[in-house]
Image 1 (cartoon, rainbow, N blue to C red):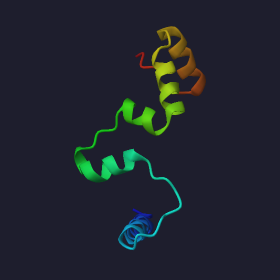
Image 2 (image 1 turned 30 degrees about the vertical axis):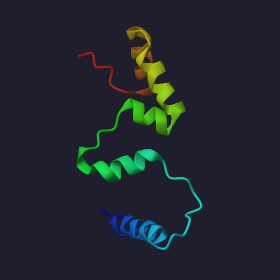
Image 3 (image 1 turned 180 degrees about the vertical axis):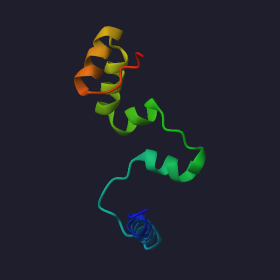
Length: 85
């Protein structure tokens, strides 16, 4: 909520760039346009993450492939809940 005015201005600025055929000077990721076009129906996915940030996607795949005992140890090291009750 504190940044809603700034986000509104950023949206206006992007819109003006398109409206005036002025290049932004930066590449916008395809996933941004998917979100804009699909609105509330957009569902982030691992494939979308891999397309947007391959390194982050690969990290998640690596963690997901860990044996349970290694994953639990990593979560404990990070101070995160291990899911065991």
